[in-house]
Image 1 (cartoon, rainbow, N blue to C red):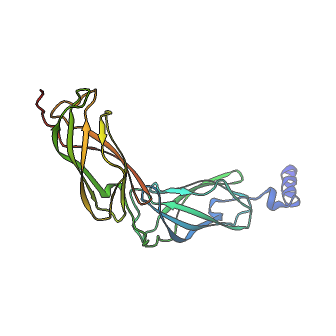
Image 2: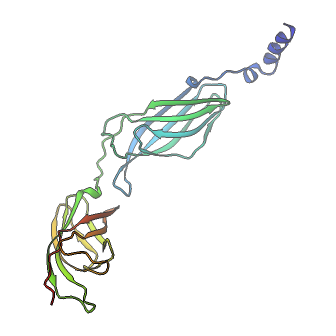
Image 3: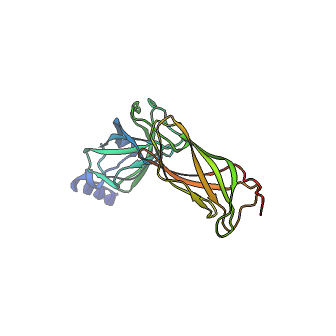
Length: 251
């Protein structure tokens, strides 16, 4: 009994609040407010910047080690974050909305993992509602590419078959389309003057030459093409199948 009394006395003597303090996860208040639109990332996804506030009402040091958005959006903030006992700190946080997208005006939820000395906490909380962004949003899927109307041309000097087709580009986005690369999936030679630019909302056609090289695509097969293009600051790399190759008469 005397030993217990002595320990209790030591707690009070050694600044009891430090030696005997008990910290709870609920002693921490987290908020994200003041969302503003920051444009689009390289994939065309909306980026928001907010004010992340941490109020440490506990008697322990707060240390944030993880933060994630509930639906899988990308969160950027330098970790770990430490906040002393009894202090409120503010940080800038970037949130990129990834599929499945959060509608404007909704409340995104965040999950954080932090410690209060030796107490580990995992908490979910709601941020302020997202604003409506005026920035144009252009996605790779907004553009449609097709190659049709293949016709047989004369073989090249190596005897490889050459085809001429119609490359159609429909730019259904709000951004300028700029094609910088096109290649055939198995290494066939593709001839097209680059770059090709197509204004927003415009559909246009171009003549394309394709030389079939080993391993050859059989007549009647569907050659696949890979293109790299930009929609303003969004870079896209897309693979698509063309119309089937015709059967060419061999001389």
